[in-house]
Structure formats: C-alpha cells, structure tokens
Image (cartoon, rainbow over all chains, first blue to last red):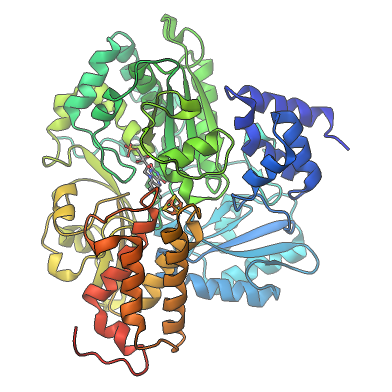
Length: 203
Length: 428
Ligand SMILES: Cc1cc2nc3c(=O)[nH]c(=O)nc-3n(C[C@H](O)[C@H](O)[C@H](O)COP(=O)(O)O)c2cc1C
Ligand code: SF4
Ligand code: FES
C-alpha cells in the first residue's frame, strides 16, 4: 500500500526544501507517522523509496532518534525529569501520572490511548516541572494536575490537543510570557508543524 | 547605555512581537537594507569588531569563525536551535516571541558569508518555535526579504526550517550536520571543521540562535557600539536562563559583570521558602558547580572560567540547602548517559557506569569503594580530571558527564560518603 496522492505531493514538497533528497528523511519519517499513527516498516519503505535510500538505511536513521516511535498510543505524555524539573518535583509528577493511568514510564495503556514517558529537558525549566502532550507544552504541572490531565486524555479522547488550552487547564507558572495563543494543535504522537501536514484544529 | 538588545520588542509588544507588521513598525529589516548596501567583507569586519562570542556554549568569537570559511562555493549557514542542555530555555523565547529578529540576522549573515541556503535546526520538542519561525519565513518571502533578488539586489536566499527528532547530541555542530544530511546524529571527528567541510562537505557556518539574533543590532549600530557594552571578553548582552530553587525563574537579558549575588538574590529574588543557597550550576548541565563562597565573583565568561567552570549555554540552575546532591548529580549523569551517541567507549560505558554506581548509592547499597570508583571512572572518561577537561572522545559530551561527579566530590564529599554504609568520612 502506498501513500495517497496528497501525501506523496507533500513529500515531494518537503524533498524540494533540501539540496539533496536524503536530507528529507527526518521530516518524511514524521509524515510516515502521521499516515500510520506510528512508525511502521511500510512507512519506512515508503520513505526509502522517496529518498533513494535503502529501507535499512532509513531504519538506521529512525532508530537513532527517540521521537520516531514504533509502539505508541494515540497520545504521548512526556514528563521531564532533568535537573530543574528534578529539583521541583518532576519525579512526583511522573509517579502521579503512572498511578493515574496504571502505565509505567516507557509503556502504553492497554486501550492504546496514552503512552507515558520520562524525558530529558524539554526547554521549559523556568516553569518546572514540565510535561508535553504530543509535544505541546504544559508548564508548572503538579502531580494532581498531571493525573487529571491523563484521566482527561483517556476519557475524552481529544482528536486535537492545543498547548494553550492544556496550559490553562493543567498548568501553572511558565518560563516566560507566552504571547498570543497559537491556534494550531497536535493531532497525534508527533510534532505539529505545517510543512509536515501534522497540524490540526486551526481556527 | 544600552542594556538590552534582544528582548526589548517582546516586552513592549507582548501580543504581536512575533509578527511582520510589528517587527517592521519597530525598525525591523532596516538593518537588512543597510547590510545589502554594504560589502559582505565589511559586515564580517563589523562582527569581528563587535567581539560577539557564540552563545551556543563554547563562546567562540563569531567574526573569527566566519573568517575561517574555505573559499569554495556553495556555502551554507546552519542555525543551531537544538537547545537541549538541561536548564536552558532562552532560544525558545527568541524563536517564539521574536522570530523575525533571528530571521533578519540569518539573512544578513548569509549575505555576509555568501550563503544562499540557510537551515534552522529546531529541536523536535519545540514545534511552536518551528511554527512561529516558519510563519516568519513565509511573511518574509511575501515581503521580498527572502527568495530571489532580495529587495531588488542580486542576492538570493532560501531558509529551511528543519525539525529534529529527540537527540541532545544533535546540538553538537557536526552531529547537527549529519542529521541535516539525513544520517544518524553522530558527531564527526574534527578537523575538518565545518567552515572547511560542513554540510554536504561544503564550507558551513554553524551558529546559535542567540548569536545570530544579535547581528541586526550590530549592523545597525556598528561593531564598536556593541563592543562598548559589558566587560571585556563578555561583550554585548546575554540571555541567561534561571531555574531551580529560585523565587523568580525565567530568562533575563543582562549585561555581564554583575555578581552572582546580584543575579541569584537580586534578579532571581533569592531562594524560596526561607531556605539557604547550597550551590548552583553556572552554565548548563555540563558545567562544574559553584558554591556560595563565589557569590561575590563577577558573572563573566572569563571569571567563570577562572573559577573552574564555564558560562556554557547560559543556564543557571540553583539548588537550596535541602537538595540531595547525589540525586541531583544522578539526574545529570543519567541525562548524559541517555544522550551519549555511543561512538566512543569511554563516553558510552563510562556514563552508564556512573549512572549505575549513583543509583546503588541512592538505593542505600553503595560500597565503600564506590567513592574511589566514581572518580576512577571519571578519570577514564577525562584523564587527569583537569579543568578545562581533557578530551579523548570525539566530542565533549563524555567529559561533560564528569562535571557533576567532580563537583559533588569536591564540595560535598561528606554527604556522598554518609550515604554509603560502612564508608568512612576521614582521609579526604
Ligand atoms: C554535546 C553538545 C551539545 C550542544 N548543544 C548545543 C545546542 O543545543 N545549541 C547550540 O547552539 N550549541 C550547542 N552546542 C555547541 C555547538 O557545537 C556549536 O559550538 C555552536 O552551535 C556554535 O554556535 P555559536 O558559535 O554561535 O555558539 C553543543 C555542543 C556539544 C558538544
Ligand atoms: S563523546 Fe559521547 S556523545 Fe560525543 S561522539 Fe563520543 S560517544 Fe558520542
Ligand atoms: S529540566 Fe525539565 S524542562 Fe528543562
């Protein structure tokens, strides 16, 4: 099975942004995740065909980076436990999130709705402890709010998650004033970025 | 006297500092017009005269780096927006709140070094930064600041916003280049340096976001004016990220030269909950820690180096008296162990060992020999345990992992020993 024409057209647009097709392998791996909801062999074969690489080369690249995931739920909840978050209770947030979901760090809930992970610094240390849902940021998260966030994800099954909305509902102090709201949200366990076609919910 | 350069617009215009309309209304792209009427080598000369030093960690003089470019073409400019050093969140603010400032710097810098394609490597966990920057790129293209024949000159430039995928090591410049080429983000052996053989083996300049965000101001006001701000060796302003046990965490644009006391207790508002200061990390997770005896020393690149650490990425992480320093060191060592790319044995094996030994000490299962073992493993990663560290590995990540261990051993050895059953405090 190959990608639909619109996805292939997007892939060609992405390749055109680089001097050499091989450079497009990273963005195309996100396109592949968007297509299948996770990283698959089929997706990697498609990326290989488009970039002139072998499937093994594509897999070797993909396996180097932690955000290309073969096993992942509908949403990925990433709890920072690096030093600034560590000092301000990041591990308590991680424990609360695992408790609320019954999912240990690094694993996915049985219903496939959420993956919980402990991650290294996500550049929100001034708003520690910090959490991301599908790479949309929430700062100043307490253990209670982290648990509430996960219960919401597992019951409401939101199609799109918006960082500003998450911050209002589940967050606290931020690293710096955020400026105006960003209308774009994430629609799966990969970053929401226009050129990749991975954004959702634009106003 | 100018005391802020990078954060003026975002503070004055909190709702729209990221838009083209606001950027132009506040003097934006005037520096580009000025630059395009200059000779490229004169722009490089202004940057040299400014004594601007890189903000990515190593503090290398930017104009000098640009002067190392091999004469061949094409050349590339790569902006390092992989910001992943624990404690650092300054580039995110520059990307989200004032992307045109960076973009104007990119266009001017590309013109100065004769590059016609620039890449911004944004870490995958910063999608909002990438979105804001991409929007700025599209606005700039529509306004004729990007694309073919920029502002009626013969200068062409494309900017590609590239999203990483979760690997701290891609912040190392040659790893970023491999990643941009569609390879595993493994650092390359240097030399050759990127200025000679970088992206696709072509001459390439890699600079940090904050470094390049300063370029429009330097072009507008001249290198001499920039060189008049701040103490020698730390010219211009610097965006510091303050976090940890401090009342007012955040990014602060400062002129260097103030004391640590003024930074932590003045700007930072001191230690919350009536606690005392125990120690702080002056420049990101890779930097050796400072203790309160250094509170009255100046915050400058050279003073921090003289006192045995580094200004690094500008991340200041404060720890109060209740901090379990072994657990804090473990958090940092675990970071390096997790992020080691695995090419070099001392780094790959050494960081794993350090993490395991700290874990058993934290679990109350440390052995009396662990104190020496920790230092022995560190010595194998960075022989001699000197500062600046000796490097036997391809990149400095390995030696960085040694900093938290040597820090706790130097300042808090008794606390480490006290956590190990049967170990004796005497005989340091
Ligand atoms: C392990 C490692 C990680 C690094 N991470 C970053 C980073 O996230 N951002 C950055 O600008 N520089 C980072 N650097 C420094 C870069 O290699 C490079 O020196 C810098 O981007 C050059 O820009 P500058 O001269 O403007 O500082 C890192 C270096 C190492 C060794
Ligand atoms: S020092 Fe560590 S991170 Fe750097 S190249 Fe060697 S193994 Fe990779
Ligand atoms: S340490 Fe958690 S966001 Fe930086």
